[in-house]
Image (tube, rainbow, N blue to C red; front, side):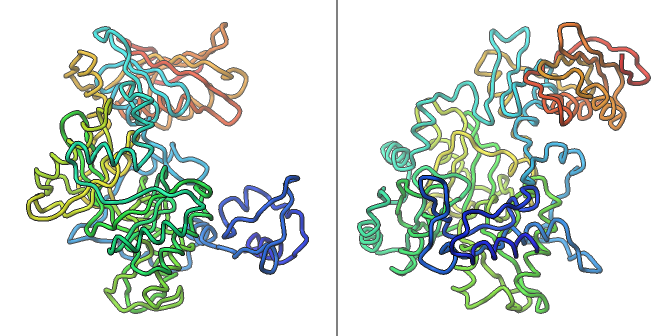
Length: 523
């Protein structure tokens, strides 16, 4: 609260050059929309309104309150969807991969786990790059984030330009929405084009991600202009944007690996359900508490920013309104989980024709072997019964929503990705290990920084046996054995280390045995 007050005070003083706040307190708690302008000397410029001409947005403060305060005597009931209760996961283990912003980055570690489980040796270069090798592989397979070594640079360039990808999809016979691209100085042309479509439209950045800047179901000229203007307050300001027809239906992410779909996730926009007693703000905080219990949504709490305010206004509501019991309150239009949306895994209920559509969309992009296909439609109906359109194809699809959906069956898609890359390289691993014995070699600044004691604490917490020692070459070497999940956790965390360490390479190699076999020791 004091940080928010200081930020408001700073915004109210018209000739203030800067306001110094402790960064660990202020980061992410307060923003200003539109962002303040600066001159060539990085000084704040005067705005058109009092202060620096922007409005204080306390959505980040709401997230902070959600994480660190609790005023209720009893926790709210867990969320449900169509008779399903929310999934639970081993959050204590997964929080080892929590980042400073609250998100839990499991993409690369889960690929590491799948590779180790199938007997592959792994090399990790930082948090996001993984190589896996085996004597029967001619060369290692690799991943940078979720992109594999088979994903070419040109492929990424194609899918990152939404209009170009859409042209390729259309040429391949894949249904896509009608639309066009405009530069920031073409807002009037964009508005005229949107109105000429004669249907509700969508405004989004040309090369966006995570739903940033996306506004859907725009029906009035004023709403279209507001959506275009709102792009100026995002990281995509001064960049090209897309105006396209709004396709009615549900929003899905189809994860395609090779020639099959391994997961389908229904993504529902941010919302809360009224209970007849709580205000919208209280409902958001209640729901965010449950989002903290899911590794996928731990860092993606519902925000009460400009977009949420727009949707509340459309429904005639404010943050203080008390919605009737059972009523749905929309807080956004894009079904992106990063913007507070909900995820429901529905692969088993999805019509085969939609699975085929997603595979064809992936195969239409040259050099793309696995992808995340964003599709609008109804997963229960065939393409003959309704219009289903592909709105995007992603070469670096997130996998946390497949592993950790809020509702529905979790899917181990990381194993599917590892096995597919092995198959392309000519090797088919078949035996899954439930216990591992490995040697872990760590390079970088790892001596004299408490690395071995840090590793020892983790090993004892997880019941792992073995030893760790410094080598004269400057690296650290550990031999450990234990259950798959415990050994995997230590192997994946080895690339982070304690605060003063800076590991830059970790190689995990399967071995026949380690010593001692009854405890863990530092040598």
